[in-house]
Image (cartoon, rainbow, N blue to C red; front, top):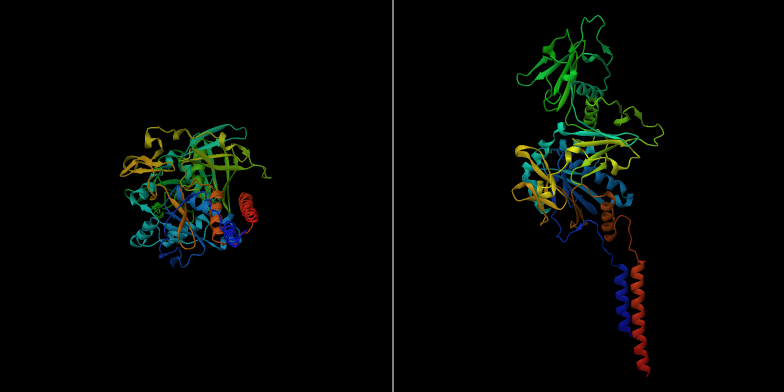
Length: 507
């Protein structure tokens, strides 16, 4: 073999052995690097994107009022973070960027990140500061879309499906009676409730050990907040007959107490209970949003289905349902599922019921249940003519819009249609986009929506880390079997050609 052939072969083999192969699972991009920028993080400090980021950068777009996609997306990214090795995590930066800066103040982002159990930077700023950032990433932000998502949640449409240990299932619609409000708020506050059921309905005898006397010199009186005139009024019906959706704020006080001293409710709460104690002091407990805990409690109470929901330092959990207790040895437990409207399937919840915000349809089943056997909630049957057959409608009236399937988006100016995506622009609030960036800030891989698999996303992060020789990865000089076979064949070819030429020369 001549010297030139040897040199060419050496260079060729070096390229084969050292060039990493890319095989991303997500959508591989061909974009220029994004520019550096500075926004404000949840601590109120400046965060310089590009300077304060290290290694591979994962960028997601969220808003804290988002009732569906964003919490799922954040929890999935938390699972990606947990799946990385210590060396890999050291070379990966997670960043979440708000698309609702008027609401997402540093305080709101702090509450959201703490509630989600994540600590990476969550960035916000003025709309003028944010717009160039959204533009760089191809993100289209429409405030009316965000407002629709916030307003659309209707707890009265929610349901809970119960699957028992014999695989029998029943679906119960959410109900929010005065009793459910009282019971759930008391549990959240850590109060005990003493009540009984009579022919006249449920009666409240005591709160936190303070029982009304047997001589009926006073009793616990239910009051409802009249938002029109801003006063408390004694209820003329029992707590079972109070609609907690129409009467958001309740108060309990001794019948001989002073109603005028009851504190006004915080009307930003979607539901609350105030208490005037026999000694004249007051307490108030409220909730900012409906969670899987409230929906579960309300639906099961409305269906008169027995359940035990424990309140622990780690939050509420279901230990008994329909008089069937989960075993102490954890051979199985009551597992929570959420209905994915886009995918048309049940998914095991990766958060506890206190952190599952504003669900539409839930299911509780023994952990050994085959998820595919849990029946779909009946109210989600779709008309194939809606959303062009590629999504489902959400909301009502002027706020009605389509939630389009993956790969589809609204036609321009028509939120009741779903057409194929033809650009790399993403309407966050209606859908969302998450990027994996190379260290030079080049968007390399994109994942749309929130239904991707954690292991697939993690594999793409690891692929880019290996390509960039970060995260503990070193140059792999050992060829893969297919590369080895190719190299062997090429060596044989070079040897054969060299031999022919040598033989020819000898002749």
